[in-house]
Image (cartoon, rainbow, N blue to C red):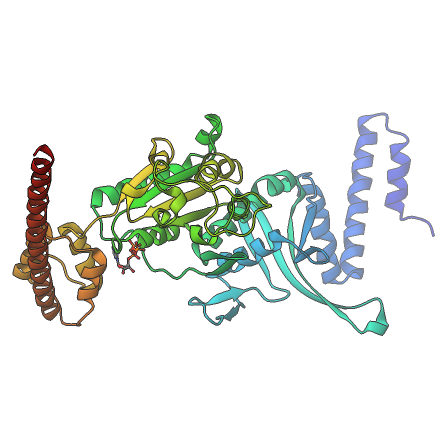
Length: 486
Ligand SMILES: Nc1ncnc2c1ncn2[C@@H]1O[C@H](COP(=O)(O)OP(=O)(O)OP(=O)(O)O)[C@@H](O)[C@H]1O
């Protein structure tokens, strides 16, 4: 088929452009050809195809020549290898619902037995977006069931997987910033809801849930001392780098002393609850040798508190000038309490310091005067804390905790009680017991006044007896001196 006349002219004119009239000829031929093409397109092509071609031509000429972005993905499955849990998966599993809790379309929801709070999880196939440092990240959760390749076993494999997609230009940022950010969020979340454990020794360490409710708010003690302890703990936690720099182990040692019922155990629990540290409770009476002590200390975890209670009850920790130290060699037969004081001190200063980090050790005693001075030497324990009898400020804390009242309520009774507490030695445990005797605050406070008055009378009488005794002792001493002279 021959081309239309105008097109023939156009081609021949291109090969022969020499003058202005030739240029005019080309223009006329081109215009005629375009009119012809347009008419043909309008007549023969349906409107839908026409607009498709036009829009594509338009975008071809108008779009800036930008890089076509490529999406890359990371797969995070629940197990890395058989039996090896993937902690990053756990982190995303916790992070994802927290991220979309306020904008979900579907969300799995439940409550576990023994837990207070409601839990959430994303469902299979669910997609959600996250924006981090101006990067857009898309997450998809998949629960996959697959038949084992060995069909005869009939085993079904289940796999859970989060797929993370993002523009390839963010590769580095995702791995270096975003993933650590998700892991960190998870760590903080876990710390917030960590169930604390108390480990006691029976063969090895046995763990049970630590349910002691004591906190610094509920502790009845001198407010300044309380604040000093909190500050000391805060300083300890944030000084990892400092300890490293000065070449000291990242540990802190405390000695709690005071009469029974003044809150030594409560303070241990308050510290554990504050720091979210597990507690290892070591009864020295159950440790039979240096090596057993070493194993017990070595097998405690980081971020924990090792408590050695009632240290005065162990003969070996008494003043060495009064007690003969017994050292047990492994060849010797079983002997109760037969580890040495030197062993104990070594583990505090040496072994305990060199194993693990972020640890606290607490010694408690009811009788500080019975302890070997070597245990009390400056530098041995970082802080000595005296838990003492209930004084007015402590009573105010207990009254608020147990009765929900403060100074403004029952002012006369409160004042009388505070006056009596200044003159009497009563433990917070004894006061707490009185405060629990009735729900009516005024009945309880009156009961406490009577209790304190009785206690004061008993103390006065005892003081009188003691005075008489010491006078008697003096008289006897003088008599025996006279007898000796005669
Ligand atoms: N300082 C305190 N603040 C609040 N409650 C206290 C305080 N001291 C004692 N209690 C109350 O008395 C109970 C017993 O106290 P706790 O066991 O802490 O004393 P303790 O000094 O460790 O005694 P022990 O030396 O006999 O082991 C606690 O459960 C708590 O209810």
